[in-house]
Amino acid sequence: MKLIRFGEFENEKPGVELPDGTRIDVSEHVTDYNEAFFKDDGIKRLKNWISNNAKTAPRISVDVRLGSPVARPNKIICIGLNYSDHAAEAGMAVPKEPIIFFKATTSLCGPNDNVIIPKNSKKTDWEVELAFIIGKKAQYVEEADALDYIAGYCLMNDYSEREFQLEREGQWVKGKSADTFSPLGPWLVTSDEIEDVHNLNLWLKVNGETLQKGNSKTLIYKIPMLVSYISQFMTLLPGDVISTGTPFGVGMGFKPPRFLKEGDVVELGIDKLGSSRQVAKNYVK
Image (tube, rainbow, N blue to C red; front, top):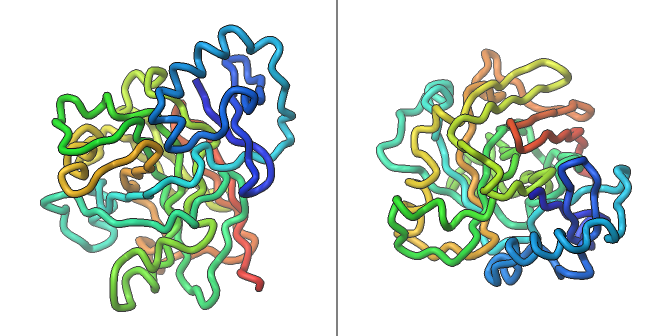
């Protein structure tokens, strides 16, 4: 099942994209795709509702804006340097344990919204990533049980301002958290539809030029390990977003480096998880 949210920013309603591409409004049955929805076995209940109501549910025009398929979560957690080729281009060693950092939840936006280059930014960069969504409360999870805690998977672009992130004092979060820096979607694809999450192709283009190509099979730390590992340090709540890292080909890795400027078009995708498109715009107050 493919969960979507549609409508104006911060006023989205829940929907579902059916296998034939038809989009239906499910707000009669679901308030939103939020912590309460996932906590209350919402995916199973929604599947049952759709089996009885899909034919009569209101249709959604393909022209309607898509928002993030998850309502603002409690946490957006990211894993750094989780592909060895990306660690090499960044000039950093492969980490001995997963590198964990946060993004502000206000960075979340729709898959095709503009990416806003922050005020005073000189080095806004791209990162195609595979994200997963927590489906139930997770504490001290055993790796063997970890996949049971995942509701589904999404495409995400982990935009980064490299000067804020790497050249100024403090945590990476400063370079990761600007508004529009976490476009998510188009869909949340439920985990039962992804046969092998560790064999999905990822790609990203800037102005039509392919700059990133990778496959999730080369993740250093696989998804079950990440669920287990992170849950040793914090409670994961339903709806939390965890993004697993990016492969080779980010802007800072080029010689000379390449960063976004106004008007650049970023397109990206992952097998089975769809594609998205963002146009870079300068910040205007």
